[in-house]
Image 1 (cartoon, rainbow, N blue to C red):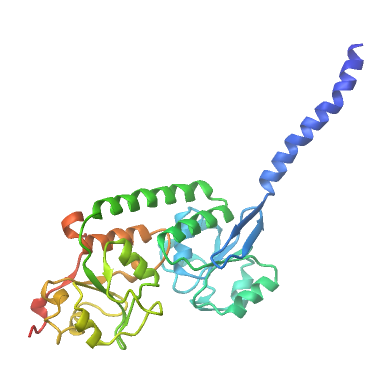
Image 2 (tube, rainbow, N blue to C red; image 1 turned 90 degrees about the vertical axis):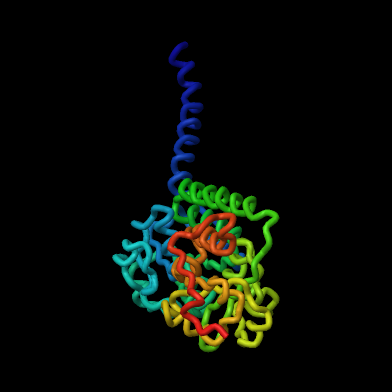
Amino acid sequence: MTRLKYFFLFPAFIIIFLNCMEKVWSASDRVICVRDSPGTMVCLQGPAKRVVSLAPSLTELVFALKAGSRLVGRTTKCNIPEAAKKVTDVGAYMTPDFERLMAVRPDLVLAPKTGIRPEFIERLKSLKIPVYIDDSSNITEIEQLINNVGKLIGAENEADRIVNDIKIRRDKITKLMRGHEKPTVLFVIGIRPLVVAGGKSFLGALVREAGGSNIAEITAVEYPKFSIEEVLRRDPNVIFMLDKECKGDDCVKQWQDYGYLNAIKNNRVYVLDADLISRPGSRTIEALERLATFLHPDVFGVAKNSSPLTSSSINVH
């Protein structure tokens, strides 16, 4: 009788065993799907193990997610962190070498929407290589990027930690700035010709969130050309310049004939670290804090590594 009882229970044991094994198999072989910035579904059969990044911001993100060991290819411009320089160089930013990229056998390629030729991306996709396209233009979209890449490379917990930290720091900035007047801002991207950050750009979004009023907010393009006459007419309180466009005294010389501008008279022209400020990724919250401090020193105190250009160096009329 006892043997007969176990005989009838045996199929139940088999079903339980198979259910358990199915969970194990699905955990190690699960399909991961996320939507990239253009809305394309990117699916992987399990977390990516061999990742190529085609933008410095995306390379930084992979390392921030503590998945640097999974990165097998990066562009020449990918210089942060130091460990990134040891990863195989697959060519210049915007013009990567297809053969070098294929040689590292990626199972996921992370690419920016701007700069990479569409035919290059289509060629990768035709070879069944998953490509995640990023076009983040504000911090909310960056938070989504971090979560998505975290899922694709099996770093969800680290992604959650980074995003939660961003939300806390971002909320603190918003609360501290509430009720404060917004200084007008000119954000210089290029000098000859004068190119500035418009309201539709990533840098324009940072200026808004940092509590500034961009004098180029209402423009049709992300980074419009601006005339010096327009700058004089709008007379910004603050001028930001990227350190890859000018260095030290060279930045001063750009404004030597316009010492009557408010930003010049009040020593509020700042040279910013382009690698920090202009890369939409895991360090963008630090960039936001830096801008907010420059724009609202009365609220946040004097910024560390602040380097305002002084009017004493400029021929004030």
